[in-house]
Image (cartoon, rainbow, N blue to C red; front, side, top):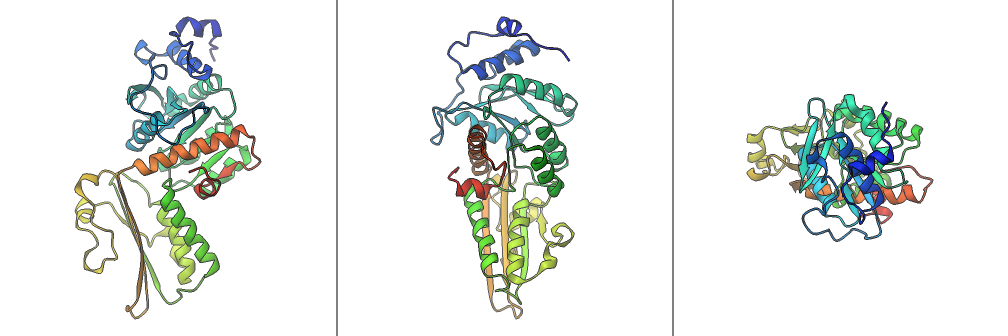
Length: 349
């Protein structure tokens, strides 16, 4: 495997005397192996104002794995806006999707699965300091476990927002590798707070809704390949309240998935137990969930709904999680694996 000498890096690098060392080195590494059009990856000041929750003292780069997907773009934009946070000039993508992508004036070189080790080498050389790089993963359910193994093998801290895959294996390989990670099905702090409250309610008052029937409907953009991880997590708590342990059987087969756009526009109909009608402008990016608890005689019903249009709330939460994780890595925290409830409780959002 070729080794890039520092002298060679300096030869390839534009003037970066005012840049953080890690950013300058990352630029040099990429410039040495990619076309001139990639030189501005993180050297330039990105467009737009920095967001309110950043820290001028922080020097964190985010490797956005999942570009050029819509969620990846949204998170990359949020990272660029965040004070003290930059976008790493390289990231993982899917097979056949390599090349370059530009997000708000920042260009990122995308590495396909066959090029993973080259990407890992760049990450280790460009960001050697603990907590200076965090990966955010919004890829595909089929990539979850392989990516987690790659993060663990290379000791790359990561935020796993991708749902699906073998979740037991995901947690197992992450803990075994000792890699720092935030793993959660939902990155929106308000939904995380609701999820935590329902978990506590199920723990304190399990069976209090016995005799009631649970129904769950979730609607997402047609490109979402799996059942919502958030719907699964919330359903687990609600099934404890109704004492319906079989609700989680067969990978939550009783959760109704809505992916047809006509059904999404129409909504749940007169029963109001289906999802709310989705605005046409957000058919390509939404998360509408309805959870209903109905008494045996049908005379009493409780509902929980959370309807999100767009992706911005998830993007900001993902960057919050990355900032939180970078601080835990920098502090050499004993706990290595977290979820978004941990992030919320520890003041990371």
